[in-house]
Length: 121
Image 1: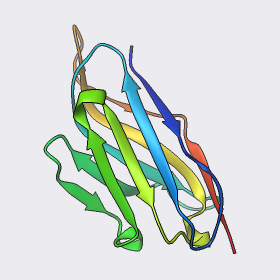
Image 2 (image 1 turned 45 degrees about the vertical axis):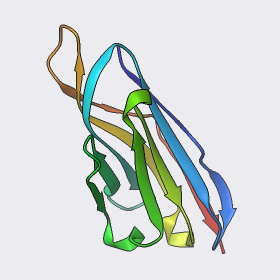
Image 3 (image 1 turned 90 degrees about the vertical axis):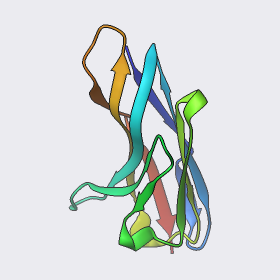
């Protein structure tokens, strides 16, 4: 019984900022890594940013220098601060939790429902 709840999406003008949040709830012992993926119409879903429980991060080349991922392990929450947004950032953003360990189960991955981010010119 794990649920990922995303928030923070919306409409913003080019050059603006948004902050996405994703909280994992349930009887969770540990989460290996958390990250954000996005998918625009007609394009493949791809990794935006990810962060391990130890704080190591990875970013897509297209967002380096503009986006920052962070994590609060105590609250099982991951954040994505998005600055200098461009129209090409428009997509549905999905939260992912990798290797979530719950009592009585094998580790598995979970996904959020997605939140729309729209950047206007």
